[in-house]
Each structure stands twice: as structure tokens, then as C-alpha cells.
Length: 179
Image 1 (cartoon, one colour):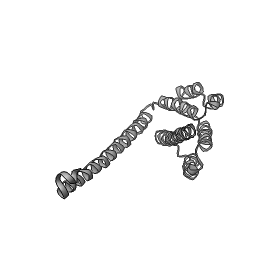
Image 2 (cartoon, helix red, strand yellow):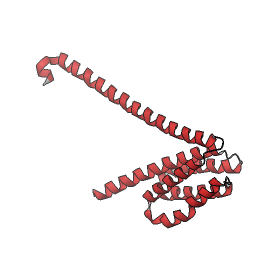
Image 3 (cartoon, helix red, strand yellow):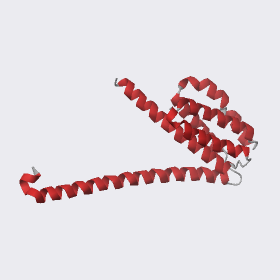
Image 4 (tube, one colour):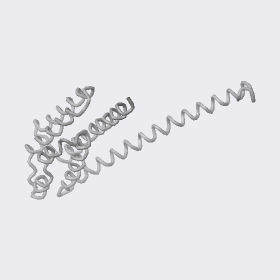
């Protein structure tokens, strides 16, 4: 219809507008991605700041653990009893309040959480998770556990992996529902 109304000039103008709209969409998508990345970075920087205070605000770890437990349960409700035993919020709260955070306990809990990630994720993510797990283990082996650096690193990695798992679960449910 545009060609009928204004011929080649109309088509040229239409294609230019179409190109500008597509460029605008791409720009907006990048903007949203940058905003989301900045918000995530700010959140984890805030966690790092809280853990860097004197004395450290280790209670932020409890909030992260509570959120983590809910996310893991979203992957599989059948693990509730096991997860409540292994990630004992009250015990961890007592460790924090008495300032006796045990690196051995933290290591065991981290490995426990990672085992569930390895179990729940699709095999296509195994190699990436293996490398990330090795970097977590290296931090413990070298004795370079610095809470304000380690906990944001660990929880951010875990949350990102669980979000991917939950996304893939949603896709699977959608596909099986529609077949």
C-alpha cells in the first residue's frame, strides 16, 4: 500500500523508519541488560560492604541462606527435610552471633549445595559448574577465605545457576504441558 501511495520514495522512507525502530529496540534491550547488570553488581557490592564492616554484618549470610533454601526447594520439594538438616539456619545464626564461623562447616555446606546444583542442572552446564566448583574449592585449599569476598562470589554463582535451572524447569513444564 505504501508503494501504491508514494512509490519508491514511500518504500525508501518506510525501510528507513523500520531500520530506526529496529535500532531503537536493540538499544533498549542493551539498556535493560545494562540496568539489570548494574543492579546485580550493586546488590553484591552491598553484601560485600556489609561483610567488610567492623564488626562484619554476617547476618546478611542468613538472609542469603534462607533465600537459597527457598530456591533449592523450588527445584525439588522432596529435599526439604534433607536441606533443613544440612542448612540449619538456627545453628548458623548461633555461629554468627558467637563469632565462631567454622570454615570446615562452611566448606561442607558449600559442597553440599553444589552437589544439588550438579544434580538439578542440565548436563550442558556441567563443565562450567565443574570449573566454578574448583575455584570454590581452591579458595578453601589455599586458606584464602575472606568472607567479604568469598560469600558474594559463592552466593552470586549459586543464585545464577539456580535461576538457570528454574528457567529450564519452566521450559520443560511448558513443553510437556503443550505436547
